[in-house]
Image (cartoon, rainbow, N blue to C red):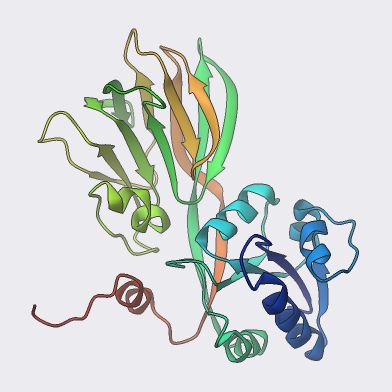
Length: 288
């Protein structure tokens, strides 16, 4: 892959962002790459740029994101599709979506630029909200779609169908529909399973369900999932990856499918998903 044009987006709120950004840019320029910054990232180095995040997405072949998973998710939501290949350098917390840290990024990035990399294609969720049968809102999520009670203090009722067949009516704090990428995020905290990125499924996980037999349901990623607040429900909110909140009215139908677009994350060769999982969750592999 010809990655001569490389974009960089940094989380300028992170301590040490400026120093790390300078080091990454120097490595790329030493390798003969043209380096592009969005306005905010360029400002960290005292350089100028008129590019928005969307412009950087459109012009680069490889995008390097400096931050944690939240920074990468924000970049995806601010960017444009089809997206470039994305390589994350983590100086956040868990960093499931990133392939290196500040201490080893130079070696890893050099290997990636030399073509020694794994490209992991990640499914995205396409979301459409219909009111009175007319679509009026749409979006895309990498991790999850959450329909929840918002600021209410009592449970809400949500009717869920899979491919037109009624699954159940959940009495719960809310509902998560997650991709395999998002299975290690909010869904995991709510008791959902961990899924390998290439498993070809989505998971529907209730949040604090009132009925104890309500558990996560895994569905094929070709399925269409529809969620509708039951009659009389107020204060229901929809978010994508924790962003873009939308207040839902009773009767609004949220339709969730696999997006035609996908995201390509770049990792160093020899770093399989289950190795990342073991490291990030601090599993010892020993009998305790």
